[in-house]
Each structure stands twice: as C-alpha cells, then as structure tokens.
Image: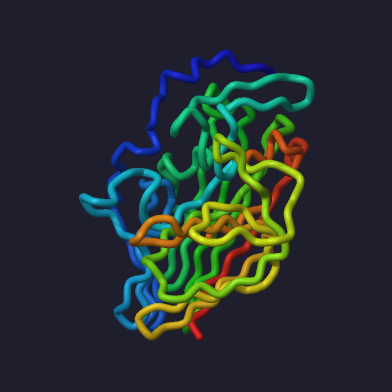
Length: 281
C-alpha cells in the first residue's frame, strides 16, 4: 500500500471548533463523568464532590484539540510532517497542526456508543482505510466509574492489514496546585519541538512539553482534592505551559514513534491495549 495525499489540504484542523454534541453521564455517588461520543469519543467533564477536573468546552476552549479527555490513536503526539515508512512503503498523512499530523484521528471523529449502564460505557470507532489512515482497523474504549475511581481502557485492533500503532489519552486537567511525579528519563526535543533520541536521564525544568519514561503514579492536587493517576503505559507526556491547564498524557510510545522505531507493529487481527486509572485519595 502507498498513499498519495496532499498534506496541505487539511490545514490546522485540530484548531477548528468541535462542539460536544449529545452528552450522557455515568457515575457513582459524588463522582460524575460526562461523555461526548460525537466529539471524538471523549470525556467532556469529570466532577468529584462538585469540583470540575477538566477544561470543558466553551468559547475560550472550543478547538478540537483543547478540551476534555480524548483518546489518541492510531498515533500519539506529533508525527513529523505526517510522514513515515512502514513495511517498505512511504506514507504521507494529512497535516492537522503546524505542519505535522498530531494526536491521531480518533479524537476528531464520531464514535459509536455500543453499551451503557449507570456506571460504565463502551464505545467503538471503525478506523478509515483511506488517505487519513491507509490501514483500517477498529478502536474500542471502555469507561467505568467506581466509588472513588475512573477507569479507562483503550484498544486498537488491526483489520486485514499490518500496521504501526501507538495509543494513549490526552486529558486537559484544570490547573493543579501541585504535580507530583518521578520520571526516570525524557526525550529531548529538536527545533521543531519533535521528540528525538537518545533518551536523557536528567529531567528538564518546567514548564514542560515533554515526553517522559514514567512507571510510577502521578498525583495532582487542586481544590483540596488529591488525584492519583496510574497507567500501564511506560510513556507520559506532561504539558503544563498553559496557565489554565496541565495535560498528563499516558501513552504506549513517544510522539513521532513511527519514525523513532518506538511504535507497536500489529499483524492482521492483532490488538494493542492500554489502561488509565484516576483515583481520588
């Protein structure tokens, strides 16, 4: 397979407004989670004891890329100029932000609601087999609420074609007063702000827009609440440049993982899965 796509036809579509559309709520006790399937299958808001934890959709935060908590797939972060090679073929994907292809395609497409209960929801997305993503496949996610936990599971399965893949989440947390985390390494960035190798051990000073190797829980504190984030993903991007938000993004590989040989390669019918849990302490 190969793709002949004009990378300039899409423009910065990640900055275009994306309204929530129909929203439904799951929850248990004082933990309430609003889900917007049509807006990239994202969580629109999380409330614990009435305290909102996510940047919600409004006139100041309407861009597709800029609110809620959305799945990133079938790649994460920036894919340099939308180009990569796989199985001996070269590919050019549409560019959606600053001359690069960012955060995959799932966050901008409508998902199907497959199952819903008072405390859980299951959604799915048939991945395209066209210039946007020339491999097809299917994505699924499960969102479940406990007394003090929000659990998310994400899965991408290949269809008839082998494909590279990296998956993760992009939550826009309202600015915490404290961020506690202990990464072991980080990926340096080049002049295009794209992650590169080799890994470095010393963590860069904040503010961050960096990908870290992190296997320990991360704790956010705000409005008198303490939130512990855990994931089976070994990579995590922390983006705390904005004054109003901090993004803590667990993912299975780094940004530009297709070009850094850090992606997972799925054969036909194979799957990759990841988990992300939020626990109020």
